[in-house]
Image (tube, rainbow, N blue to C red; front, side, top):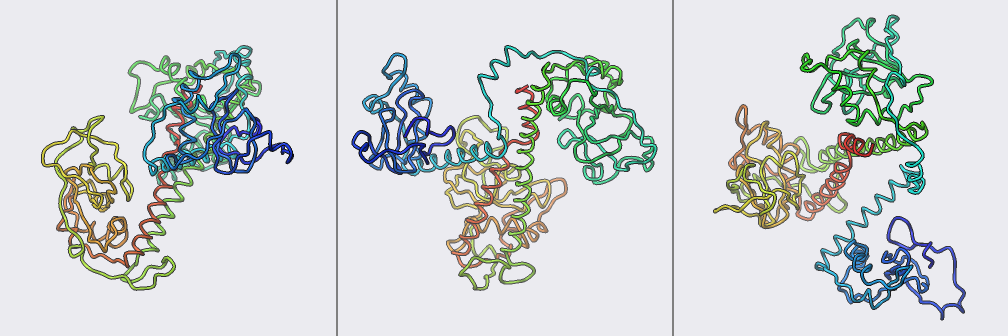
Length: 551
């Protein structure tokens, strides 16, 4: 093992460039899969896990026989933390090159949880490393040389240029009806078909007087919104051409404008250009959210851009690839949601049937049927509202978060309160259903609280199922299919609808044997975890914030 064999990303040693002769083994130390090794010079302190048999020289330290105190993956993460590196640096020996030895490493102090929590932490960071490696390989196949970037900062300057020096206005009319595709600008989706965005056509029947916009050209929508306080500028990418109202300002890149198209897309995804527009917009000159900006004034706005178009291109390409990655995850998330909906229909009996269309192997018996009142006990949460929330305190679930935050299984809570008298705590067996909401569909949903010691706020119906009903399965049953439809019909109210425990007691429950319930619950819990992972990855709104700060 040489230092150069260590991967730039990841914690596993999977190969070496060179081998050692048998007669050289006495001069080195053998390591084996599962051994943890630590760099003791140069980038000292970096830990790795051996995935192969090998040998190490004196540039490495070997850590073995952890006496079942540490999970190996957790220990690898722990030894690479900033806290450990600080200890290494304070104790490292050597003048020009810092060095570690086994005594120094052995004298460091570590803090660690029990072995189960260690395993969870280790697996979590291993999954993150895998995702980072995957996305670097698939979406960022170019390298970024920090030293080259520093040199570029010294030699390539950014300059201020008028928009009119880089682009030219497009006033091409759709006189020959080359296109009848009516477009609108969305801050999130860009230039998009009105029928797709509004689910109807807003444009006039006769669009011959509209601007004809071609692929690669830009349009400025002067209408303001919460997402676009000074309007939005977007490039036509989805279609070959389309038509826009003459209220828009349309432009294309000049042939010798020395501006990269992808860079301009990224630039207008930031708020760097807002000050220029704000300066030319007459004070208070908004008509129904439409800024009073003339095309002549708009093209006099000043942009700050790299003087070298190659740098513009690299920046534009970077953000274009990032957008592609985000779009991919959004599509995956949408596809997973559709897949989940389909599987819920297929794995629960439909239309009076006693067995579902799809089952796990080994299960053939018909599902049983009974009213929920005979299979569970019912109660209510107590007190608390949004006004009681604190940054720290005792974790609590409020009913409104069931619509916006939680999936079928709730294991972690991020809202807290100071405890009040007569509070209701979870025991890790409850299924909760909101008691009120805006629509019947909103409140016809349930979640299983998998952790004890969580406060259950007011306006929550609490169900504790009997031993033969799996709580995850019950939450899925209430939230989907015939049971959800039945519960929706029982919801009462106009502006605010309510569901009571007496309504839940009358729900007709279809259920198989406990083992099959458990498998169904585990299946959809894993599916929810994958969906949540994709939902937490960057979306378009977060990317615009990132673009602003990055540029």
